[in-house]
Image (cartoon, rainbow, N blue to C red; front, top):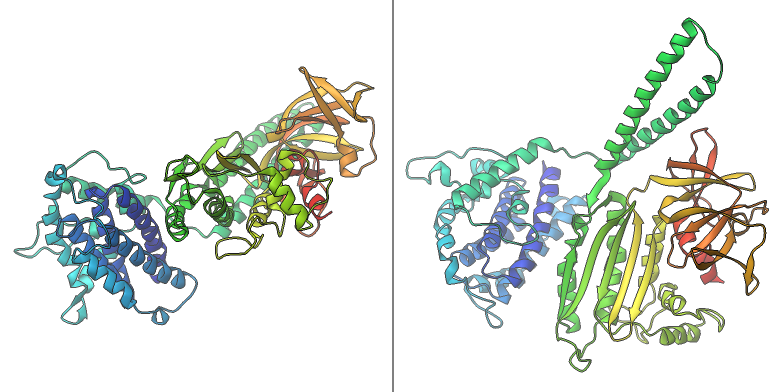
Length: 623
């Protein structure tokens, strides 16, 4: 019961934080005020049920604050928002401790400072000009408040009744669809508060903090309760390890079906008569059906691992708000594409890289004195995600001062990270920020300056076969672009052969196949082939991987930022392969292995290796 409460309450706490940051910009939004009130009320009920007194106290005070805010007894001030954020942070910290195995009785009590700031906010005090009082136009909607306020004590104040827990009220708070006992003089059943709903309710109230069309309070409450019950009935939590095991089995079943299809094709080359011919026909039909079902199983299993990046993005507005406040900068974080879906492993692994990138933009990119730079006082950092083919793209852009390639190169030279013959182009100079130990700050601060942040970013992205690129204009800003495969375990590939070895190239970077001539033009001693009017350099795949070069007469035009042609001996088709990553050894250019339909072991060439023009950037940096 405690585990279920923690999972649901963490979802609620995350939604609350998002609502509060939206409320800071739209202080007269009554629906958000109601959503936050219900969230804290629900968490309080569950916390009382599992005996977490500190959490109950914090939620109770915050619930009182939002009851005062939504009824107009207290104004929505910066102090009120800050108090609610601190309460949300305290609750989230306790929930995370419980999630990590802490015993309930080992949790800290509510800090006196939190109690004081919540009390001041309830009393209507402000540390500055009030953000805004509820607008007169919202008066009709505000009439709904007395109904909820009347109902609130039934689930709120009754958590502790006559010195004892009111089990009936707590049961209604944590069990979906529980009908409250209505006595004479109580609030009618149709006016029962939405606080009886469970965790997902606040998420249904607003989408990205935007208010919906007006509706009657009773209708809104009934709809939310109904939606929550339906969602509960249609969803189930499954351990992630079980999903991973299921995906591996599904992938292997597809591979087995493909191998069986190849064997069947070979058998059909022989002549069968009578009963044997009928059996072969039945076998072909059965195998075709098995292949379809295994493919459907694989697709269905993959879909269970997909999660929207919004689950990750919603953690960043508060982080940016607090860090900008510490740095004395006025920054607005704009998030788009939060519904883009990607493998859950990618979502989980992106948190640290994005934190470092946002901190880098705030500390290094955004100017302290923007007026002197001829820019608006408020700066903007954009976090944007979208799907591009079989990849997901994530961009972090700031409208700050940009990066000076010459300065970056000078810093790297001074630190001994490169020599005078390296990083000569603008792109190569910008990539220097990813070198371990590189920083443009002379003195490290609590935010940056130790030369590890951007190195962590590149390492984490490349770990999942992704790439990262920097585009920067002095005085205009800097953009970091991350490309990652949507699905980590299965990728579309082109099967090729070099020096007799079977290899697979990710289709994400394959543009087309061309025929190579026996002789090439040369530029600076390197072979070049003109393709569609463009002179493109030609690389031998066997040569860059360390194989003995053979007769390479097939070229693959690579769709990368700096296009080139990759020479191979032959192209043997395309296939969706189940990739097993190389973890114990590091091989230049190879990121994993797979099995072809014929059962042959195939080496998979790394996406980042191909995007970088077949250069092992990690080794080059060390050299």
